[in-house]
Structure formats: C-alpha cells, structure tokens
Image (cartoon, rainbow, N blue to C red; front, side, top):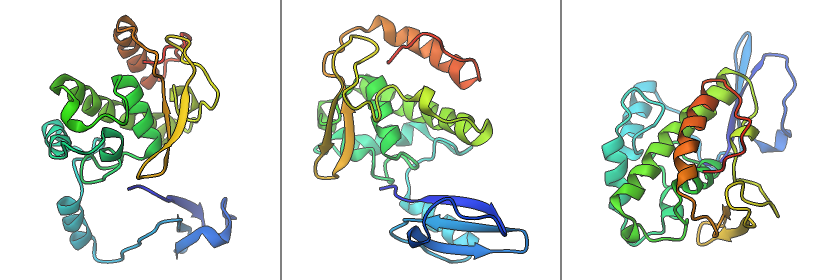
Length: 216
C-alpha cells in the first residue's frame, strides 16, 4: 500500500513538514531529497532496485511500458478480495493510493466492497481505464502545471457532501481490513452522465476548466 511523500527542496530551503516525519534526507550541493512517513526505505544500486520493482509491482499507468491487459489480469487474480482492497495492493496496479482508489471506483460506478468475482469484465476494464486516466490527470495538474487536484476530486474528502450526479448524500466510512478513508454514492443510477464525464474529463486533463460539476 502507498504511504508517505517525497519532496525535493533547495539545499537551504526549510522543510514543509515536521522534522519528526522525516524518514530519509539526502543532501547535495544544491538540492536535498526528503522522504516523509515511508514505512520502508530501501537503498541500493539503481539497476537492482528497478529490477526488484519490476518483479514486485504491477503495471505503472505512467510508464511507457503500461500494460492494461496485465492490470486486468492482476485484478482477476484476486476473485475473493473486495475491489477497494485490491486496488491498494501495488502488485495489482502500481501507484494507486487512497485518493485515486476512491476516485477510480466512483467514476467506474463500482462499490469498493464488491468482491472481484462479482465484477463484469466491462467493469474491470472501466476501473483499469480510469486508473490510467486519473493517474495521468493528477500528474498533469499537480506535478506539471503546479495546480491543486481539488477540481479533479469528485468524491474524496466530501464529508457530508452530496453527489453531483444524483444529489444523494456521499457516504463516508473506513473500509476494513485496510482502515482507509472511503467515500461512495449509493444512489447513482444515471449512466448517460458517465459518457458526458468521459468527454469533460479529457478536457479537464488538457488544461480546460470544466464548469459543469459532473461526478462520474
């Protein structure tokens, strides 16, 4: 599962997070790399680390070697597991953290507690497609354009909020056994807006602001 954050600062720049959250700091002449909250940190030669990651991790949506079919295969390999739990396993699809997990399932119209065995192949394909789309969208907004991702969040952290599609209250709870924040709309039945969102979502990720508050 994904925890922690990596920041890069100028050599004398103050840290943005408390020092007690620092797990690793590597300082060079001009910059320093700081790792916060990571449960495990492994230091080794680049070639060996990359080889280990290729063995341990699932396909990466941001990689030039992204393999959609492998992502589908990895999900199908866990028939008894709830999809909301499976998506946080980095062996399934690398890079999916809790925010992405919530947003992917919301857009794919799949409840996080459904066992993988209960999903149709079309639902699994939607999940994998949104994993790629949102991963790239978050990267574009947050990393490349320097913008916050708030405009891309339709369900995450919507405490006591309402669904933009059907107006139904957003339900918040901690999904077991992973104990991660989970947000769902249990009232949505409108499939037409799913197609509209596909168009607007693409515009959003290209830097065009979406003025229509679609949620799927």
